[in-house]
Image (cartoon, one colour):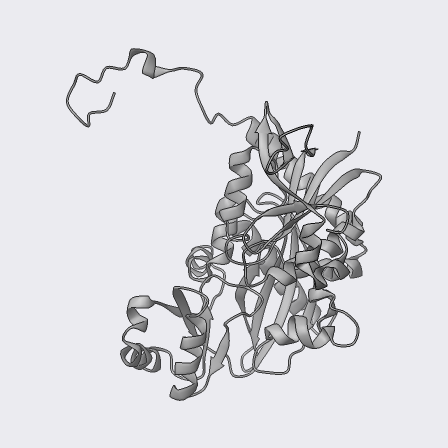
Length: 393
């Protein structure tokens, strides 16, 4: 019997369109002899739709028309079986109802990759592919990441975190950045990916612009000193917190100081149709010495485990060419295109990668099924409310 998989993409995120590309790429590579796949599109208001056109990228040129011929569904748990049920329910006759065994979220960015959606899936009682709630949240918060990785002796650049209260005193905030970090600096929203809202500032005027831009996308902003002679190296990791392995390394090529959203998704789409992160200009394998390649791959696995990840993640590193030092930059817990292009050079086709991700989710679900989360008792049967207010039973 085939495993019934809901492949979910889209969602309320500035990386919505990127998620659509990643999701449909994955759906087209699934092993249909082993899996019964239901594509599920989440709108920018997080409404879920299914239908014949949902897995057709050309349909997204007119999303209103696509939704008009698709069916809105909601996820429900009925007697331990999770279903996608038509919503609103039909007044007469039987509405659409699809049983699913596992959810496969291929979503990027705030509200969907940061633990919020994972928490929803966990509450619904459906096994899901990828990082759990905690790892997803930590993976999205660049500042908390740094704190955890420092504890694990993984090299990261020092950074400062600023909130809206600091932003209200912009001049004072910039004075602090200049005094503590100096120029150039990188300014980032603390919880976004795909290079959205990220920029390099080399003077005070650019710094003000960068801060304004970053605060458009988040209520907290991270600022760190920028490496002048920078090489970016990426590596994917597959596994869980107990066992994991690293992919081939890549060096993305970019037109500016950092790899921008334009570099990743727009410029490479012109003339040929976007293929998401799979279309980015890059060197695979990266031009690294065997020793540096292994250092990157070993550090990637170490960071993946330290953050408690599951499934496939992509970890972005920085090399300071002035001294050769390697630094962890950030992790993408659901990377664009699921980083399949980093596994193919090692003989792992996309179909196998997706299969192994599902197996890891099933393994986690089996392990969690053996953990006690509740007691078969009801202390409310004998509870008395006649005692002191606020006392524990």
